[in-house]
Length: 499
Ligand SMILES: [Zn+2]
Image (cartoon, rainbow, N blue to C red):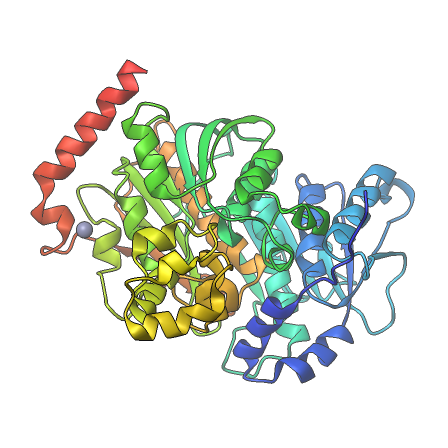
């Protein structure tokens, strides 16, 4: 096979850094590229090897110098684990291999473990949660073996702390975590439970992008079983390697559908792929070809898509998001068909249009035509358009319609994530909130929890005040059309029985 080398594209993680610091991406890049980070791990801590591999991948998504302590004596990492770490780093950037060996003198030392004497930063998973400590702060006694969720969250939090240091964020723009104990299942409530095996039925994941691949990474780390429908219409491309939690440069070169990347990661689950839109999934549910999901995990990046996934009318929506000025804020919106629904959280607004709606408004090209995005624009398409639309589009005849908004500079942050700052360690924290809520709400005998909204800036870290209860908006569609919603749900429930 002929290999075409495409340099790893760090632009979006650099954009996140530049937006967070208020600096210029170019000078920042120089500073980040000069940074040295050294990783070590206490392999006797349960969950530490999963945590290590995610940490290596998350740190490799920054253009820093990276080294890994192989350990010695009985604490030496196995050859298999070392190989996995080296291969994961190479899959993300073959030009920047991770060095296995001693730290350079100036390196920032991050350790997976509780014995923090030599490290600048320590973290360990504890059950589904994490403990992060700087020197001078002692760890509590670990209660449980670290789960896959706890391991991924620990790696994401440690990467966030490294990110703050290597980008030299200004005081006031962030909070350096000295000591943090956080569990995305129990949040800050005192109730705790030992991690159990996660088995899911009739789960749907809408979106296999930055957050969707982070959800899949966590489900894989949890060794979850059961079945899940995954919906995404896009192709995995080179810039995604730096911002997504799954997928290598080679897979990007192969231009696989994003749903295939998720399916390949979840070998223990029965994955039903929908390489298409939410409307395609709804059509397949109504035709009895796909099960009606009970729980929908929303991993989309715009409001229109959130409204779309609400129309599945599953029993529960757990919608994760990243956003805020610098793209560092994470959120979870829990939604019910009876309200609060996604429209209660995100009322329709004319200022937030999708890329498709923008292209339609600028050119008059019908939305139904724009939806057939893979088909090239033809002279026929231009006939009947307003003059301005024809003038804008005539240079682009022969190009696929789906990329036109971007080519014509019509896209903004809403609807097209091409220019949004983004980092895998942020998306993994959003995904941790989603999977944490999934576990809390599917745990047999678990206490019923009110419908919540959670939001925090990863540059500050989670705190007890990040959780709010939500009620429906009285003028929302979910409150004014309860009969229609009940009918649709009853019809789709019937389809489940006739399959
Ligand atoms: Zn509503």
